[in-house]
Amino acid sequence: MNVHNTLTFRGEPSPLVDFWNDVLAPKFMTYRHILVGGLSRHSAEIMPVLDIRSGDKALDVGCGFGDTAVELALRVGPGGDVLGVDCCAAFIDHAAQMAALSEMQNLRFTCGDVEQSVGTGAFDFVFARFGTMFFANPVAGLCAMRAAMRPGGRMAHIVWRSRADNPWLIAARDVVQTILPKPGEDALTCGPGPFSMADETTTRAQMVAAGFTDIAFKRIDAKVMVGRTIEEAIAFQLAIGPAGETFREAGALGEERRAEVEAALAEMFAPVEKNEQGLWMDSSSWLITARNPADT
Image (cartoon, rainbow, N blue to C red):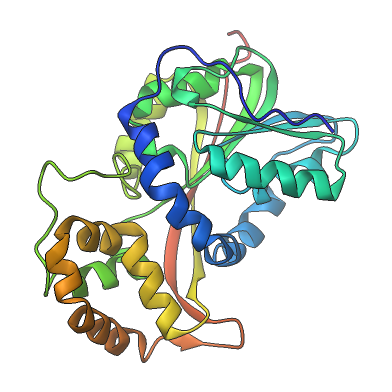
């Protein structure tokens, strides 16, 4: 198996990439079982309908822990090839280790910022699951994805829909912000944020500006797991996402009022749907598909 842990991209790492590596990646690693297992129903809805073909060369943008890249590699078969790219070195290290254990010969990973280019004209299919929303410059990131595609190539990316349709991320934030102040304008963040591509009109315009054609949106509603127990769900929310950002930016005040925050979140999670796997909450995403024009 050909696994690369580094790749030279143009330019210097951006402050946003540094923030992901230094602040967010350790938190995501702690809760990777939630982030992978919790999104399983979205993957189950989406993967079967993707226009992936045997023998395709595929690119997984923002591949995270590599679970979607593995699914793509199974779809393209031994005659195809999948490259997973993420800006977080810890994610790529984990993905490469997982791939090595699986002994898949058509799967490799590399660490880099896709917004700074990932090559030209090499891929038949480009995919991203909940990654494009964090592009510092969405049009530039989408342009880089299209540039990596062959003429006539296909792409699909999944992004969260509106805040109102995603209580799994927003309900905890609203509870925390009844106790702690909202983050200021100078707060360190993950980028534009998980809802930056929620509006169909805006995102369609960005994709048109990036040169894509045959753009289509499909709504996907699925439950997501937010923790195996209420205690873990609380810890997860205070580490990651809008509630986590609020708690992190509150600093010493957040720690001082932690018990109050945790009690309020426990009350919020009490009626949430539970099964033997954990707590499940409503979520909604867009599956967005498009093509690179054949005459590029």
